[in-house]
Figure (cartoon, rainbow, N blue to C red):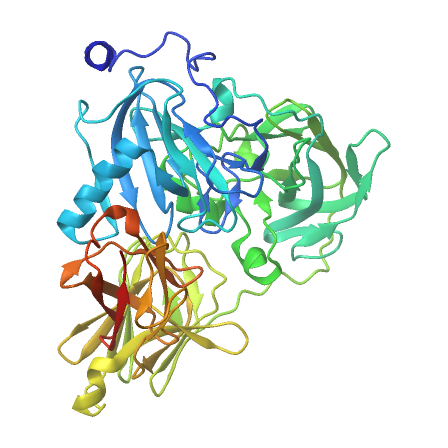
Length: 561
């Protein structure tokens, strides 16, 4: 049966369904009704959400079923991100992705563990051959979990095209009840240019929202002049979940003519970070609110469908305008916002002041900033626009502006540590100082001679930090010399409060054993059903190393029949 299926699969692999989005091809990956905690292209920190987050009733261990026939083309196991993730490629060219899993189905689990033991690594990425793990539609492929960067049990489910671009799975016929239109929490107007103003101000203005009895909105009447941009904060809710989710489509109209559109059908991973240009990044960092710009200031995102004037409104004196925003969820429930704008020129206003510093960064050039033992290399096209930056070095602490300007790619920070005593240089790392208390957070650091370097896409404060403390190791569910015959799992808590855990290695009687690491609970877990521990008397040895090389060793005896 599987040979027949595989032959059919190879024959039709590159043939797409005639319909752009086949409606009956994919079935639900869960046996329970679909309720969502996250929607496709929802705004997230530094990225768009690439699938659906399907609720699993606050439980782990629910059966995950293949949405269609195909073969397992990729398996990734990681501490972070998707955690345990499975990729199934289908004969019509699409790939489905199942992430944050607890474990894989038995045959896949055995395939993975064999290679984990061969590589002696929990984390791995595999690309099986098409004939290795052939899957039937509705076949059990995994169990739901909370692995990786998941904050609560759920299934992250994606559909990707043959170019690995994520598509909105709702386009393929998945039904989620939604009779509630999107809601709007804020509208802002932005004067653009020296002579522009809104309500007698040359800075961004929040507009008072007035809900109508039909669920739509108007704003207070606006007096404005010049080039204006509008931004909104909006979300959607489905009927069976209280979560604030993303919307599906936003369109704007000026005097009845469409002027702009955001269409959240698909995107590519190499453009997802441009979300920081779509939103008002400074506002997000200061207010923790996503304001979506309805004008395109040189953003290359493919979800932006500009019509006239890139979404900007050009307001002339003594002229009236009606500007409308239509927000749709996937079920086509609309919310409308109406802005009545009067063109009134005010020449008495002072133009907005642009903070000027000695450090001007031309976005199309490479720039090096250097002071004392610290240097910053800013490469061409790191910033979207030319900017003035604050740059100051005090001792070994770098103040590189505030994290309120988005970056397209990494800068390189370099710190000369030759003035530190040789015995402690190996314990130094570059830390980002975060929060009001400027808590040091490890930034991936490399050492070349007497120089530490780190690459980062964040402005802010950075310093040299030192970690001389070894990780801590503490057994969670057993004691030394305990009999564990009736135990399924061996659990150990590990932690490093300074630079963080880099790696670990566990052996029993000298043989490497697989221990799964959950960084959220700081727990290592070994499953005795792996069959590696087969003797009565067992010597467990665990070595844990942090990011600057400090290590701790834990040894204990336990017994099993």
